[in-house]
Amino acid sequence: LTLKILNNDKIEFKAGQFIQLEVPPYELTEQSVYRAYSISSDPNFNDKIELMIRYVKNGICTTFIHKYLKKGDKLFINGPYGEFYLRDTNSEIIFIAGGSGMAPIKSIIHHMINNNIQRKATFVFGARTIKDLFLLDFYLDVEKKLPNLKFIPVLSEPKVEDNWNGEVGLVTDVVKKVVNQTENLEAYLCGSPGMIDACVKLLNSLGLPNEKIFYDKFA
Image 1 (cartoon, rainbow, N blue to C red):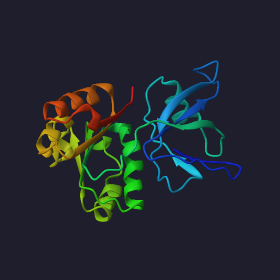
Image 2: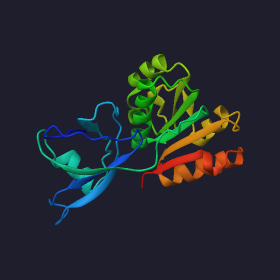
Image 3: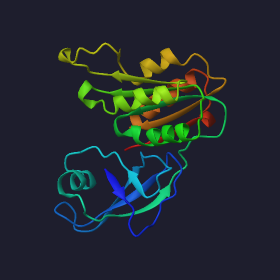
Image 4: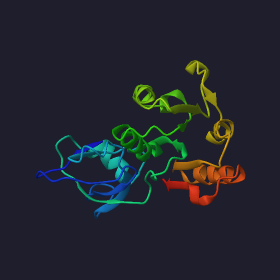
């Protein structure tokens, strides 16, 4: 979902931050409600923002966005907020995300391209099946611009007809394989609380302290 900022206004945000989006009263709610969504777009373009919003059945905001919102409608947002952003160090990076948890990490990757941040990085992205993967062409292009960054999609429940020959299992299975040192490592995690808790536990067991693990839980 792309939102254009009106009245020649701008939004200044750090890659990784989120906004609060107001959903007006409609069939599922008698009053306005707010929901938090991470910005997935390039912070260099401050006259618009891009959000990744997964449809959840009967979800007040997701139902409105997917089934009621039309091109040209006006929405209200406030923000940005949050402390999930790339720290200014030379450490190696591991990004871990699932589903729409990709959003803030995509924005951070835009920031890395814009500023020629060529730190060694791995992005492990978890999905269930091939139809749950998206923006694969974008990440092929990213790997050309950031040759030290490797994007690794992993499917937990690939179907036979998918003919998938990539990584299979949980994101934690792949993280175990790709993390071979933690002394000079930072981790950036975004996704469901269960996935994040499992990844933090694994990274701790591999020797990465909590102060080097940054995360944004998508409930």
